[in-house]
Image 1 (cartoon, helix red, strand yellow):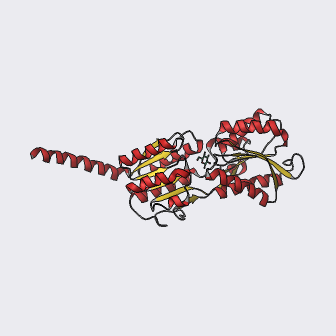
Image 2 (tube, protein in one colour; image 1 turned 45 degrees about the horizontal axis):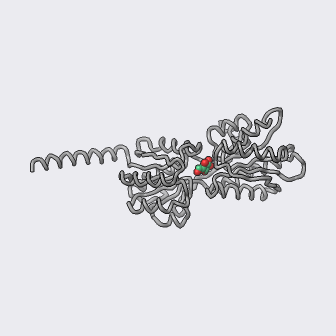
Image 3 (cartoon, rainbow, N blue to C red; image 1 turned 120 degrees about the vertical axis):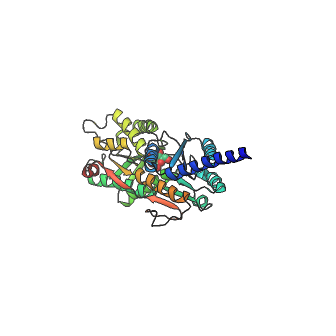
Length: 333
Ligand code: BGC
């Protein structure tokens, strides 16, 4: 009897120290990253850690682009007893499985960067999405390209009144790749610039592939190319690598290359005058919204305009985007 009482006391002590650790350091949040090698994702998740500091305990897992691995990681985190999940899915169309796993355990799940289908988010009241509006980003990028073409006397190299463009697309099926492509090309046309897409290919968000694909475009079209539209900055920087190798950005030979994200290396390239423009994919605000949401949901509270200062539409939070160029950057500093 005495033994049992001693054991119970030890157990209670362990439990209460565990709970007070939770109270002191905040909820335990499982964080699943699709691929830790991705430049934009790296910056957003490092900002997430800063936001969580002293307020939530993060358990971070990297799926290295493998959905099966991510499924296992989520199973493991749920078994660990996390209070909330933040998931950057490998395959956004497979989110239904992840949402159902979280629902079964009654754990809130915040999907980020890769938007699940509305019907999947609708399956669980505690399933949210935080990201950006890719239509808005596409439009901003297209508009910037059109303005460059209209305002720059040297932009129309062959003088045919048409902007000959090559386009580097992100991962097929990713909402940001599909919608940025569609809305940027539509925005160019609606700004009154006639655009001819000479070629379009996917470079899977990657700089090295961007360089490879751009080198092939230069090989085929040479100086006929008047503009390079890219779905993200890494691919734009890859395109610039290929253009530099072909003699651009020296002796007055310029090519407008546009990206999206405003990552640190892209800002450097803007300052250097190689990247023409980008659209801010606001990693700071996204990280902040994710952590605020995780704190509210893991605490069992409802999300209201009073406790969550972002617009929420049907459990979807879109952070606003804006254009960035060298001139804007210099004016800001
Ligand atoms: C970013 C890309 C990134 C992708 C990953 C996009 O929103 O613009 O740079 O590779 O998300 O899912």
